[in-house]
Amino acid sequence: MASIRNYAANMMCIADFFTFKQLIKGDLIMKIIEYLIESAKHFNGFNEPVELKKIRGKAIILSNFEKSSKSFDAVLNYSTINMHSRFPDIKDKRKRADWLKNPVFYRIKRGFYKLLNDEDGQVFKWACDNDIELIYKDEYDFDLLKKYFKENKKSNN
Image (tube, rainbow, N blue to C red; front, side, top):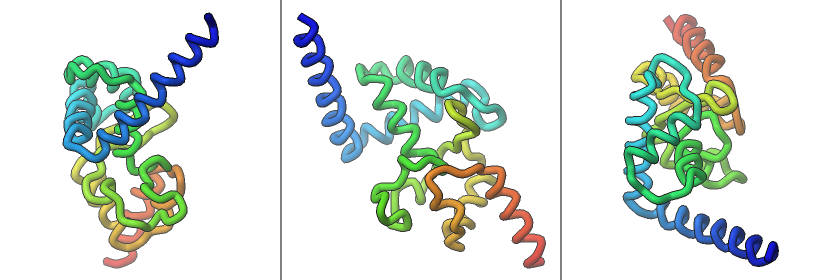
């Protein structure tokens, strides 16, 4: 009986994987991002770190999708500028990626995220435009990038 349950659980993981692969190719991923943003805004995500489970829980309720929480977590991490999962090609981190166009979140610490505001978006765009090495690390402290940005701006003025 246990082996049947294990088989069923493995099949669900495989189904989830293929569902997520299809998600990436379609508009559904953009809808999930919209729900994640709306959820983070609900918890004041521009000003306060928000716990992943709160963002995910609210987004799942808003969406009415019957997707697993892992799908929402994967989309959130893919949309987070300081997480290694955002790289489409881990061997070539400078390969252009969707997250370079419209980043949404940054990770504060394990399990806590904030929405990027306009100023944060400008900092990240500057880092991309200037090929700042820090953004190509698997994970980094966004406050360190902001500090580097401010120092660079002062030295150029």
